[in-house]
Length: 189
Image (cartoon, rainbow, N blue to C red):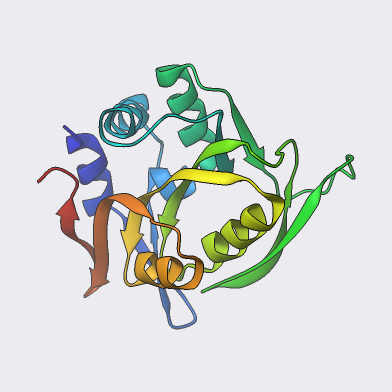
């Protein structure tokens, strides 16, 4: 299992954004072309390995969208997306975030105190996005039952856990060395 995702990671192109090694693969960028089997591998792995006793799947735009969609279809759990666009809907909450390669604002809608969620993101590397979002969700009274970053790069997972107290699960732990993705561990192996 996870062989197609593993191959896509090992075939990733590395680009530099300042001093930051950014890997380009179907799960993090939607390029090169993402094969549906990769999303099926991910959604089945999450379904088989993590607590899904939740009301909603919450994902972060943009690459969380295909992950949440596939997982929603696999599990029957509804999903919603934390967006990069402001809608000015009643109860909308802004989240300012800083990552290893930029700053921006995200917008949370349709989450209420007591909602039990699975939060999914494509990758945690610097931790900036998840730290900001988790802290805001906690302030909103949302209960994060499970948080999955499909890919864990560097120390991002540990940074997020230390900053938020929220356990972060991942499927692959990896790093970049000599211009290539190196897989350190895979869930279940």
